[in-house]
Length: 378
Ligand code: CAA
Image (cartoon, rainbow, N blue to C red; front, side):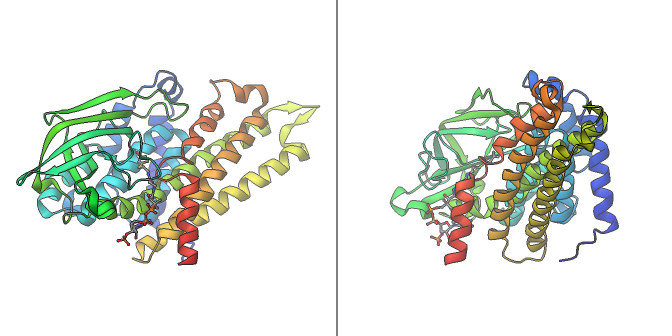
């Protein structure tokens, strides 16, 4: 693994940093307060190529490597984790899955717009199937030329703003996970309705909804891969998604750390800057070390994926570790800010709330430990 970033990777990181500071930072607190999706900012992210970074240029993508992607994710997440979850789902779960497993027709029709301006959603979780993803209750009955889709999906990122939804559903329950399919559903298909918006603890600017499918006719050509491939599709896609969420967690931690470092140099207590007190210096040392360790794991997973190597364990380790670092570092950043850290006009308060979800979505901490231990013991 090469620790030296290329000129191109550095340019991507700098462009993402610039965008985050100039376009995302203003208004981020208001968007969080009012649960407002960053519509305009996401549109600009599409124009700049942040929504389809790794997609082949033949499909309008940026043709970049995963290292460039995680660098951009870290910078965007330092400032606005609500924007970065939209970016992560679109890049890792929707575009990557479609490019790797979609038919030429699906890539032409769906991937091309998604790589530039469209927004996609990945619909696996259900009211009674979160971590236990094989227990899908949503059904896709084979009707010959189409599937009849019925069921409910929960906690879907980009739930209302998406135009394209990849929906995981059970076609043949007797075959268990081998009877599951992944179907492409378009907004506006008859019988598909967007349900209530979730009032969340964190990433409040992101658009999280339940979805209802009632006798939705999904054409057969919208199935991704062979009949029964849906669960494998979801698992393989989530392996890549976990690198995206790990880089989001890393960014949240790094953003909180940078704010705490700055504050510790400005704020005085007992006649000297906070940063001159050993109690604070040791906190900063721990935070910086945790962040560097998380970054190494995230980059290792991204690098393995770029080499075409097995990255499943590395992605799970990166997400497991970086999401805990996000918890620990944001909590310490609030502590360093004292009373100011507990009020909403200081960004660390939001970052601490945003951090929690990285231990839950795209596989909880406990699921990552299952994936890692199974990989060690197999
Ligand atoms: N990569 C590739 N394949 C995998 C896999 C992985 N990480 N994990 C399991 N599989 C495959 C297995 O090889 C097996 O296939 P075969 O039968 O062909 O060999 C099949 O999947 C079933 O595997 P298991 O028998 O291990 O299934 P299980 O039920 O015991 O456990 C699990 C599977 C790993 C726990 C899985 O259910 C899981 O990952 N759950 C978490 C789901 C999740 O991450 N949800 C997130 C929701 S999406 C989201 O959050 C997006 C968002 O909006 C932000």
